[in-house]
Amino acid sequence: MADYVVPPVVNTPSSDNSEWNWDWARDGNAILNKGGWSLLGKACGAYVKGSERKADYHLPHHKMINGKLTVVKGGVRAAMQRLKRTLIPLSVKKRVHGHLAGHYKHFGMKVPPFEEILSADEREQWDVLSTFALEFLIKSLVKELNNSFPIDEELLEFIVEQTLAVVDLDVLLNDREKNTVQKWEELTKYMVGVLGDFLDND
Image (cartoon, rainbow, N blue to C red; front, side):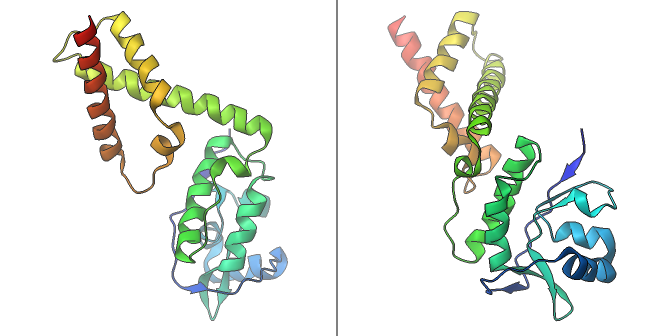
């Protein structure tokens, strides 16, 4: 499988131009002539690491304007619209959505939910992946808690079941306002409550 790179979000300089007319021969070459393949990668939503083929660079939304690589409002919107039809792995598509969301917020636009840019098959795959990801997080955390509290298999399954029943997967996995440590702290606090309820009813 190709090794995809999703570049960091860079919002400066930026253009509020809502129009977007990308031409690979004109705009792609202008970027290549200025900074080579590494600069072209920064102009896109995702690209194959080390590639020197334009076909491996997806969803451009930056252009050379006044000699500087500039993020364009219309390009950001167009990239988000094309993301659904872009043939890249689902996990990469999720990261690209997060990248474009950073630009959306810069321009004061409402970010479309990730699920809305997925096909029906991709949405089903994402639901499965999200569930597995949450189960992995919970089980990893339970193992850490087990160092100070004896947890058997029955209790582990109970915690997983109870957490999956009430935790909003989309909020937990996609909340960009909280970092990973904050999410784990909240999850830990909740799971301690689950443990307490289990012991009180035992």
